[in-house]
Image 1 (cartoon, rainbow over the protein chains, first blue to last red):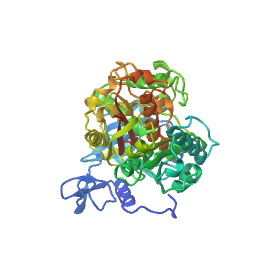
Image 2 (cartoon, rainbow over the protein chains, first blue to last red; image 1 turned 180 degrees about the vertical axis):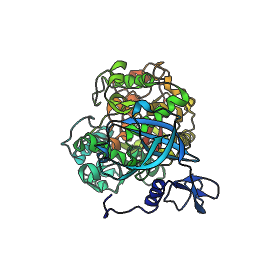
Image 3 (cartoon, each protein chain N blue to C red; image 1 turned 135 degrees about the vertical axis):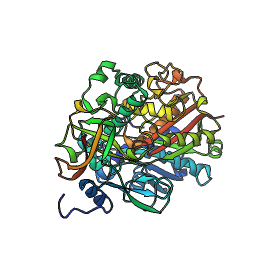
Image 4 (tube, rainbow over the protein chains, first blue to last red; image 1 turned 90 degrees about the vertical axis):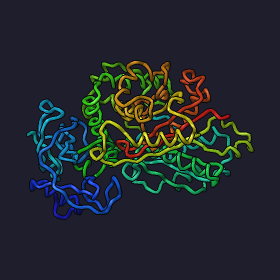
Length: 128
Length: 378
């Protein structure tokens, strides 16, 4: 990421925490979790929010094999994109494996990588 | 509507002027009597550097009326219809033109893929590389895991909708396809291949909504009534939904529309649903209450949603074969269904005795949904 790129408060810090191996989500007083930035719980509207640690070990719920990308991922294709569950939180990220190695239900490890096209940071799932 | 297809050189304003003129001529109204315009468009800023499309499109049609653009991703057109319906119902207007337009081919495939992706959550989806074929592929793959079914079941949806479009002169693809062709098509985001996906489309659609009083006073032939409208909302990010294989926004929109029209899902004779991808038609059938969760996947294969089936779905060809100029789609569903009812659609014979139809238009991975119930007017 270039130094002069506008930052996104809340997102950037949460992404950095994933990179540090200490990921967190936002939890409201009713126990609903979501990803930042949040001022209110998307589920119930509660504004009593706090950061809560989430595990780095998760389970792959689904995946695709993307061949036609957005321009920001022109040089990344083909790639495997997945949704995985870490505790109560689900995230979308790049599965760091070839399609034929991937199955739903596999354990994955949450991490941070970068787009080969833009070198921007992105969420990664390593096969555990 | 205009013919849907590939016309990269045509401007949005030219497309809409054609569709709007067709609608006004068809309705037989005096354009001086139009009270308002609602215009659905998703990505004019990205495709032709054009925002502020309300007044631009009003003037393209030669109208000097309050004009507002409505943006709800691929549900923009249906939402524009809903605004018009509400204006007529609450007595603020007697005559509203609702329309939609999208210019897409000038962006190229990657450009259009990028443009469409902005209907997703930028931070937690787009930056991770999501595309819309990719998002629906995530839903399809999870659906197979949870409920069973496979790519061949979905291929039947594409085959059916191409069959319906084959003789529709306004459709982008007027050709039948085989199961093998769908399964062997180039991958877009597996399990979604090229023929699981609606095409990139240039086009516009428009309809004239008129109050009962105005129609009676001016002796207009307004034979089809919008008797129910409903809208639903969900988290933009698919990962933040309760379920990856069910679309509650569709259910909420449908429940509201059914109650509004005083009907139940079982009363619907035929439907135009948002089949931007083959799996999307399955999710729509379940969300609308036509099938239990997990059971919609076999509907096309069993012929239940075919033109001669129990519940014909997407007789127009759907987004899949008619084409999907995203901002126009929700309006085109209304104009096609109106023709199906009136008897001047190529597939009207399939619904000769029908009295209740339903349109379902969705935005993103169904973070927005809008449903309308159409009935033969008394």
